[in-house]
Length: 385
View 1: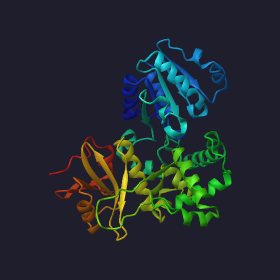
View 2: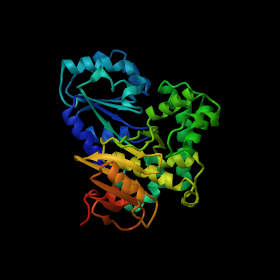
View 3: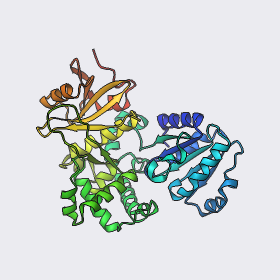
View 4: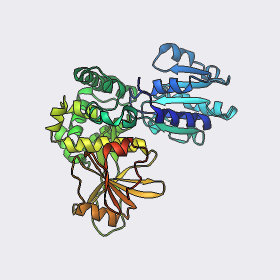
């Protein structure tokens, strides 16, 4: 068992202040375990909506969920969206912190809690996979290859981890998507998800992908939105600067878990990964996912122009506008593209995230920072003198 201190603290703070906490994350990210560990010190009741016995208990939800002073945890809530109006009524009758903790394997909007049903009553907490700070900087390559889903990362062997992820992909396509309300053929979705893996980190081009799998552009749009709502794909939107250069307007698309990306591409070992043409894009996606978790709720965007200038990630953190350029290199250097990003985006500072062993300043506004310092360091955005 790996202690997830940051995520546990985030959940405790939300439960202490909000009547309803919605904890979302992909399947098998560890939501149930984290909730049980975090609220076990207080009186709590648990409902698992994949358990028919708990579904039967909720036949009369107003009675089953009445306020007795305990925290009520509702797991896999996306299976019963009709429950949420009842939660609103119950919260309004007795408004106190820590009334409900709702767990869901889909986006808040898809579950039904991102809309007005519980507006002003709910706090959102996202749970991705394991953070590098959870497992230690020395396990960076393991986290990258196997991905951040706990059971994959903790498997005894590479073969066991690979088998677990293969089963995860099959179960997700054959059962989980249908449970979220998406009725797509599993074989078609597997082809699409695999095709998407080959476009990992690239600008979204619906026409090209639609042609590759012989469906309409509208269909591939529904497919990618479904995977995004199920929290297995991330669409990073573009940032538009007020400049005269033509800027790219389509999102970039990433498979959120690097371990799932590698299984979709048939990558079994670190040797396979190092020889793969997706090496740099896989590294970039893993760093973006870890950064998004560490600095949540900062909303990631990227920037790109048709003349070649680009920035992998733009974040607003603590009142500063920060840029991140991510390179799988041990010899980071300042580039013309980075100069354009600093100027056109008016960045307060730019961090070049690299795979080398040392963090150092390239100039007064650019720091070459190691991935381990950025993702597991105590004060990663403090710039060196």
